[in-house]
Image: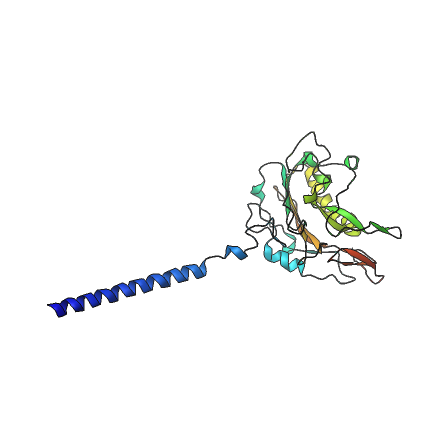
Length: 277
């Protein structure tokens, strides 16, 4: 009897050991497949150095695409901008709920390295008479002129010309006709050429759609490489709810006859720098 009881107890101990072993294996597999949020830069897009906008309710530029654009080098003679995603926006049309702008917080280097997204309608169109003096100096900003040539602009992510009535918190206020043109969350150091010659091409497309009565989602994302203080370029994309407006481009932050040290924003004369408009 005693021997039979011992064998039974030994068999029970073996069964229990196998059960414990299988539980430990299952737990280890679960932990291995679990996301590591401590290293997930999308987990807190407002404080990362190079935040994309993946996994937002309104779509936009993914972290992967952000890094691809940040790694692009402009070569003299190249086009001022390139298409992203075959020139189709990744914004989600049904995300448009109310007229507002979502301003991302500055990152830990005080840069506007994340996307600003605007949900716009006709009443947001502004004209030149609503311009105000700008005084905010974004990262990488330096003396604006050299030998009479304008080099830098305080570039708006969401242009003042399509954000009339939008206050600093991103809400529509009919009393605020000129919009918020000195919001640090909406400015970055941009070349005068890129801002005045190229970006306006796409801003005008948005204005046209708004004037025609279409609702538009418009997103702008300055693209920084590493810890550099001046953006390498800016991703612009827009889509109208009617689908008649749809673009997605990356504009290089460059200036003819000048090259930039993007680490600090300083420019130097380079007569070999040519930009194909």
